[in-house]
Structures are given as structure tokens and as C-alpha cells.
Amino acid sequence: MDSVFSLAENLLRVRFGDLPGEVVEHTKKHVLDILGVALGGSSQAGVRELYELLTEWGGREEATVIAYGARLPTPHAAQINATMAHALDYDDTGDGPTHPSVVIVPTALALSERQGGIDGREFITAVALGVDMMGRLGRAFRAGLKTPTVAGHPGAGWHLTTLYGYFASAGVAGRLLGLDQEGVLNAMGIAYHQAGGNGQCVTEGALTKRLGPGFAVRGGISAALLAQKGVSGAKQSLEGEVGLFPLYHRGEYDPGPLTEGLGKVFTNMNVTMKPYPCCRGTHDYVALALSMQAKYRFVPETITEIAVYHEDTGYFLLHPPEKRAQPENPVDAQFSIPWAVAAVFARGRAGIGEFSHEAIRSRDITALSRRVRVVVEKGVGEGRQIPAKIGIRLRDGSLYLEELPPQRGTGIQHPPFSEYERKFRDCAAHAIRAFSPQQVDEIIAAVKELERLDDMRRLMRLLG
Image 1 (cartoon, rainbow, N blue to C red):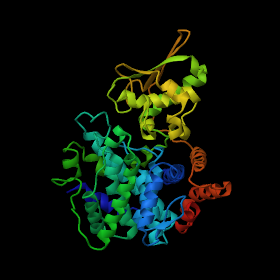
Image 2 (cartoon, one colour):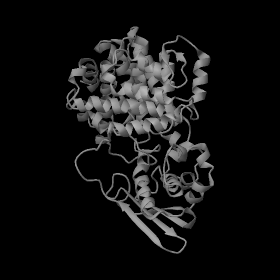
Image 3 (cartoon, rainbow, N blue to C red):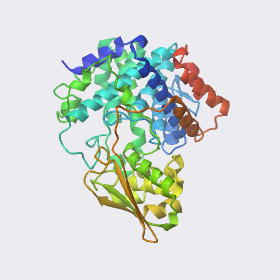
Image 4 (cartoon, rainbow, N blue to C red):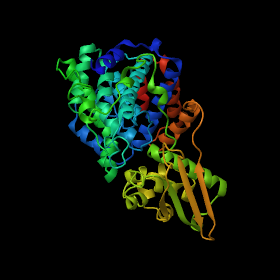
């Protein structure tokens, strides 16, 4: 039987009391994380244009657009919120790789408003289950992948967040709408008929990269609403003869992770907060660059060459070299190891301002990014023996060469809530409208005690 049946049953069966305490706390942290990056992303290119279009279309006032305050039909509001939450590429990452919360949280928020009376415990449960499902789809793909990546993209050419987001969004929306198992199966089948999302937007630096999760959310919610009205969808949407894995992934997947420990083991704990607003694949190099800059305090004008070592020059964060060294737009910058490293050595940081329109025109970062050279060295790069290696040559001929040591220890180390709070405050400062310190405090307090909230609409009133 297709694993989608077990996933749908699990989405409906699990209750708040079934969630491990660590999953509850981790879910709250990542709800705050997504709300923060949504506020920060609300002012980014592509978001206002989408907002203007969907408000022009109008419709029933059901759900709130974060930061803008307008109330729109549920799929509209959720689409805008998911888009702004992905705009900075600062949202969390999980198995696959996917960005799970950027799909699941906007879906659950919009449905909670539409339905009314959804309390924090039910909201946390729905979000936790949706994130777990995204992780399981990503694990199944990654565990069974046999062919090389396409153009260096880790999703074999797919934007997995968008692709899997259709299914998970539909499932979460189905739960919050009160559908039965057949209804959820229909919702995911209808979502599958829409599902897509590819990496070409990353290659070209197109704004569709940040629009992808919004498309998934809009499609998933619409699918669940259609299923509620009795529209049928393919039931074997994941493993049927032309289901997702046989068709989109050419049968290269491992079915085990889809259902192993379902309802008892949660992939949520593999989801990590992003410390920098750029692709996760750049982060080891950013961390190493920050360490070197703090240690040696290089003066940018004295740097004549920055050598970035990596096993694969065709890796999408290094190729094409001209675009990665001289981004044409913020998306290019977000997906560039050379740019991220140059930003650190130019400014001593890699924050929201280092990946903006203004930054890619700046003299300080661009002067250094032109001096980045990629050096091929086997065993270096994300997931390899040496995660990152950087060399700095100065005008006086001196050379500084360092590498990031392999990660050791047991499991993923998650930062405390205070670190999520710090990031939230920083992102909120970049919102399309000003939020007072009191408003920011109220949002943080509400999320910190989310399981005590009697109606999620209270939180959305703070964010509108």
C-alpha cells in the first residue's frame, strides 16, 4: 500500500499529548523563527508585487497578511506570508534538504484564522506533523538517490521545498479543516496534480525562488478546500505507478523513512535554524571566514586574493563563477559562497544587509568578491571530510590558510530560545512597517507560551 495512507492517518490520529516535550519546544522556536523571517522578508522584492496582485483580486476577508495587515481569502494570505518568509533565504532547513516551516506555519496560521477557535495546542500539533511529513519525504528521496545532482543542485534539479510542500500543506490544511482520512488523501492527490518547483530559478537568480513555497501553500490549501467539497484526487499520490517518487524521482527513493517510527519518532529535531540569511550550503564557509576575520582582523584593502577550496567547481553555489563573484541580484548573492565569504572579510558579518540590492552594488564587498578564486581540492565542501577551507593572501605576500574541522559529537545542537528571540528582533527591524518594542515583546511572549493560547487569531492580530 502507498505510504501516503499511513501519512494521512498519522496526520489525523496524533494529538498534542502524543508529542514529545522536546518536539513541542522545538516547534515553538521554529514558529517564532518563521514569523521573524516573514517580518524581515515583508519588505523584499517580489513580496509587494504579489501582495498588490492578490489584493487587486480581492475576495472574502478570512486570513491576515503578516506586517501588511490586510485580510484576504485564505489561500491568498497564506501565499503572501510563505513568500515573505522565504524571501531572505533565512528560514529553517531540514531533511532533503527542505525548508519545512516556511510551508507549514503559513498554512496552519491561515487555516486557524479561517476556522476560528483553533488553540495553540492544536496549532503546534498540526505544525509538528506537517514538518515531520516534509522531513520524511526528504529523507526518502535522499536515502534512495543514485544519480548525480543536476547542475550541482542537491534536489536533483527540484526545489524540494516547493515540490513536497504541496503535499504537506494539503495534509495540514486537511487536518485543520476536519477532513477524514479519505478527504486528506484526496487533498494530497489534488495537490500532487499541481506539484512542481525546480532549481532553474536559482541558476538564473530569479525571484521565483522565493515565490515557490507560496505556490505550494496556495496549492495545498486550495486542494484541501476542494477535497472538503467532495472533489477526488489520486489516492496513491506518492508511490503509485505514476506517483511522485516513481515519476518525479525515477523510482530512486527509499520507502523506509516514509513510515518508520511514524507518530513516535519525529524528523522535526533535524530541522535547524539558519544563523545567516543565505543558502545553507554557504554556512560552513561563512563560519570559517568569521573565525578567521575575528582571529586575524584582516584589513580588506590589504587582501589580494581569497582562495575558496572545494571538491566540485560545478557546485551550484560556485558556478557559474562570474555570477557567483558578481551577483546580478540578491538571489544570486544568497546562493554564492564567494559573495558570502567576501562579505565577511569586507564587513566582518553576513547579515541581512550583506545580501541586499544595495550590497550587490557596494564597493567594499564587490572589490573583494572579484578577488575570490576557487581551488579544487578533493574532500573539501559541505558533507565532506573537510566542510570548508579558505586561504587569504595579503599584499605583503603572507598567506593564511585554515579549514573548518569535521563536525564531531552526537546529534544536532539546537540553540536556546533566546537565540531565536535575538534573530526575531533583528528581522522585525527590517519589516515593511515599524513594530514597536512592546509589539515585538508581545509576539515573542505569545509564541513562548503558545500552548496556552486559546485562539490563534490572537497571535495573528499582533502580526497584522
